[in-house]
Image (cartoon, rainbow, N blue to C red; front, side, top):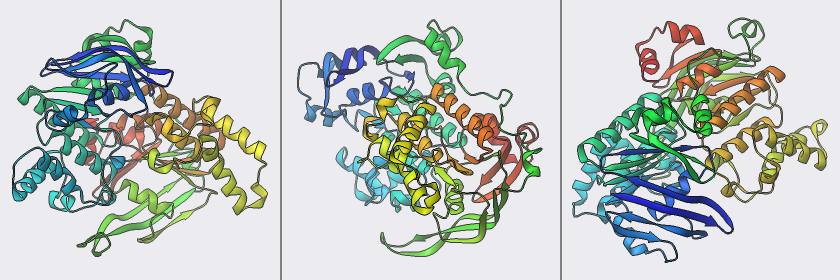
Length: 522
């Protein structure tokens, strides 16, 4: 059905995809795995006709049912691609925040796909959108339909993008990290849905992911990419059970699992005997909802209700729950980024910082990485003159932090748009850590990273906790990451913290049915 033959893609003189050949058959899920920057997304975007104009296809061709969609040395046939995009082939992007129009309601944006490629009436289109929203696990489809992107959580926005991709039942779905922002229960729903569509409609899926556990579960074959090349291709069983290449073996061994944890503190012992770094007392968070326009709001929506907990020096406290349950709302309220609250959060540390879930939206695209890393140091010096540093000292600190998150000095002068999603997340983490905070909120800090860099970042955070006695509220949908990183775990559902305990206690003896479900599906 789909053939990529000898594909080479270059940006200027730099080849980012090198002589890649892949075939994708009807009814098959082909996984593409590899580290950030390995060429996975560029390959997918080239297949879809969405790669930037600065990219040059220097060798190869792309075929869909023996129709040549793209060929090296020939200009892109945009009209041909438009006839295929949406109707015959669709794509789920990694970062839904950048794919949805912030000024339009999400229901209308999904409906637009039906309008462009069908003859349904407006009422029929809306009904189809609501049905699709429900099928991808979106609660209250009517409310989602009428919402703007900023009114939805990251996971909810991702599910909207998946709904947009599958609504016309295309023969090819290109999924670029489609479950990055989703918790394990919704992740399983979505993958079950995509797998069901794959089986019933006999369509094909190109599944790009850094989550090797997920690739292992759902893919028929897996291609491993490194430095723009396919270094190994085989069945999922061959790749994960009998890898031939050393690089593949390294990736497989780096996958987080429920092994013995390497923690920054002894959790309920030494850390809890200290005075807390943060105290949260009966904290509730509200949003205005239900208005008829972008600027109106007539109804209070309770996102968090009655949260009570404390975080201690050197401790990682995990926060786990479904997308939309209130995790991010709670973290922003703690840091004073949301004023619609009741109750209180009391800080006993200096300069609390946050690592955001979406690094693209938190990094100024006009500034260099070096400038962005120095900004927290400049801000700290402006607030407290005793913390002011010379320009040379700030630059040295920025270079050092780049190295500590696994990036070379050459990234100092680059801008966020020149980095992969995983690289941008590492910069975001470095920016949060460079000023030496006493308390860190990490909102999905490794969700966009490939497994090898993920392991490096987790090790880095654990080392910093030991060195600085750093306290961390660690938010994640990946239960295996939480197990490895956290001393205690809080389970959140529908805006409430329903269970709290030491990590081993939660995993070995969960009390709530919802907790048991999370552990089973993770």
